[in-house]
Amino acid sequence: MDKVSFELEVVTPLFLGGADGKTAELRPPSIRGAMRFWFRAMMGRIVGGDIKAMKELEADVFGDTDKASSVILRLGNVNLNKDSYNPLPHKSTGFKFEGFKPDQKFNLTLSVRSSKDVQNLEIAVMSFLLLVNLGGIGKRSRRGFGSLRILKFDGELSDKKIKSLITNQPKSRQELENQIVSLIHLASSKSSGFADVKRKTHSNSSFPYINQNFQMIVVEKWKKDKNVIIEQPYDTWEEAIKDIMLKMRNYKDEVFGSATPRQASPLLAKVHKIEDAYRVVVSAFMNTSINSQLKGDWKKMEDFIQSLLPNVTKQ
Image 1 (cartoon, rainbow, N blue to C red):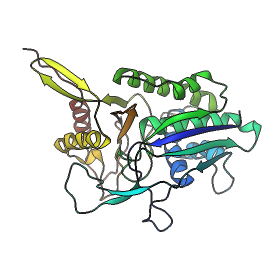
Image 2: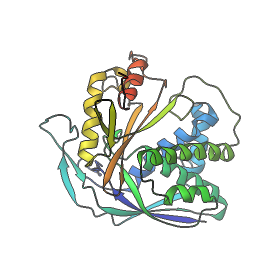
Image 3: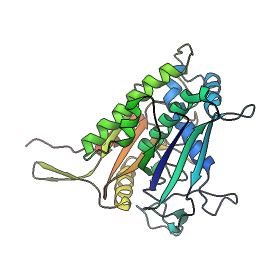
Image 4: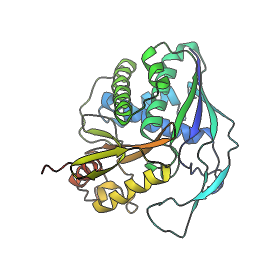
């Protein structure tokens, strides 16, 4: 195995700034940067939040200023159509972002420079799978935009479990949740085998990573008819993002992120498209370090996540 290829579909608008920072442009750095984030999320439990050790591991796969990346990322068929979208669909705003339209396809290929780097390619694939299942690329990717899905896969993988996670298509909310749980467990196993680093137990980290406090749920729209919960997928990606954002308005708190001082949100919403229906995967890096100037209430985050789940009050 020295190369794998994916055919990808745009699920929600991609807000990707080009060289001028304004015109939407789909380039490898956008995806590579997101893969680095999920690499750190996967490997953090190994280094215990040690940023120096993390940078050394990350450089082995994605390179740094001193050495080239061992994994090469190429894109194909990137001349996608664009349109303008409201980045806050739960509000009536006077501004829009230019983004690539949903339901379009492009190709991504990951390869390695040398056969000795095959393990690095496998780890890069795992980082990409975490990205596709839990996150997105570009602006507003933590709020559902920039979501992708895998349509086709080509290439040989030594670990059949990875290929199974790529090719199996879940048909229900529970199947999707089970598959992502399996992905997270496999990522944990792969990270342990990849990094020959003495485990550390730093309680604070400058980057979020998947540990025992990480939470993930799959959300559908639901309503209560008497004492019966009726669940079904969202009909459109707009409906999915809008529903999550409207519910989040009831739990305003700095723990969800801040513009001033700058604090990226530890909560992520990713829109999944299965056939012609949509579901949202909401995940949270609970109890991670946030800016000391902020007074975030993690109980608000917990309450918000619980509010997304059906709740039947017994009569």
